[in-house]
Amino acid sequence: MGTIASTGSTIVTAKTGRFRRRIALGSIALVVLLVGGGIALFGGLGGDDTPEAVRVAVEDAELPELPDVTPVLASLDSAAPAPDPDVLAARLGPLLQAPGLGAGVSAEVIDVESGDVLLGLDADAPSTPASTAKLLTAVAALTTLDPAQTLPTTVVAGATAGEVVLVGGGDPTLSRTSPSQTYPGAATVADLASQVVAALPAGTKVTRVVVDNSLFTGPLTATGWGPADAPSTYAAPITATAVDGARVSPGSQARSGQPGIDAGAALADALGAPGATVVLGDAPQGAKTLATVQSAPVPRLVEQMLSMSDNVLAEALARQVALARDLPASFEGAARAVVAAVGDAGVGTTGVSLADGSGLSRLDQVPAGVLTEIVAGAADGSLGEASALLSGLPVAGYDGTLFDRGDANTAPGAVRAKTGTLQGVHALAGTVVTRDGRLLAFAVIADQSTGEAAAEAALDDVAATLAACGC
Image 1: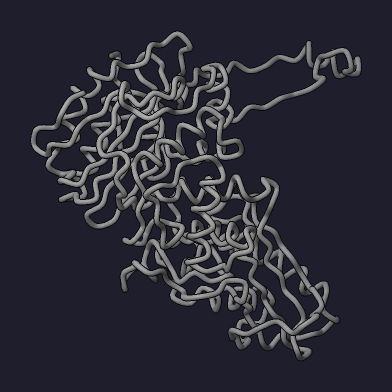
Image 2 (image 1 turned 90 degrees about the vertical axis):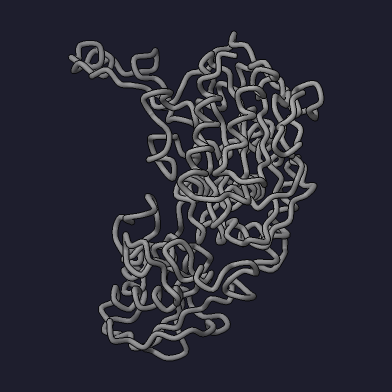
């Protein structure tokens, strides 16, 4: 093992690393390919069950020449060797001491096939994870909720003829536009309104919209959020009803301080009643349902949450986990539910403490080793449904929160990772394919970083070094 001279922290190599899951590399490749890119299966076309006319048409069809396409994701090699831990420690040690990362650095690298820990630096120490905490919310949602589950938004009849009640089911992706400018596959206010119009007696004029946010309970912001966090460009008060991720307008970055009222106003506009009164309140007991729309399925929501690092969507998903575990749909209940669900999925939770589901709280604590265990478990398939989280990890230099980080030309598709950023906190956790084609899981958390640009550059150097490794 090697020692980082400036801190005295020890880099642990494979011989002293803790045991990890083992699975055949062929299975790993299948999981990564299935969640990393689309696979279309066409049954019967040209086969024995195909009608003769169709068979002839297919066989005689002239297909256009397709241009060469550069793969986005790097390929795995079943014969690729694992990096040598001592060589890896020698190469990464200086990078993990980069001034921009500061003194509070923890890191771990796992060989996914063998489960060996190739490098560990204070990997069991609780650290402020920032948005890499969303990996825990992703695991909790994917392993707790049915993959076909969607989140409903409902309108019921109000107490008077001109009143309707918008009942939030916890879907913040409900869109003012058709289609959504931010969340592909989202339900739309227009659809909701058309159903309401069809259900109301002809000639009914809506004069009042009540917004029922009672599904979610407790404070609207989490302990550990700063006063400027909600509303901001990255977060909003968390309510059971919202439109466009609680944005002030479709496609905007700015978030609203009153998401529920905005949703009610959007419904009023869609009903042709822009002057209707919009208030918060509860739906009458036994009220008639006028309309219901459904969000995209949970795995799609998880993908969007990770790719865009969407705090509002993360909190909404965490509360669905709480509801499924019969806990309050509050910050506290959601945090408890997520930690419990991650543990039930088989991931160690020692050192994990959450105050929210997004990682925005500065009270959140997650060891780097927990993040690598999640990523490795998703990649090797041992976390079951949680493998779907890999498709939400941005590709460095290509999309999501990593679209402008890393060089897509140097190692195309080699790094897929979740970012984490707070003031003084920078983190990166995901998968990397080495130059030889070996799949690794890695996580680096720097919760005493000294500057955003320098810290991000240092993290990118670590990821690039792993990708370039023929060691």
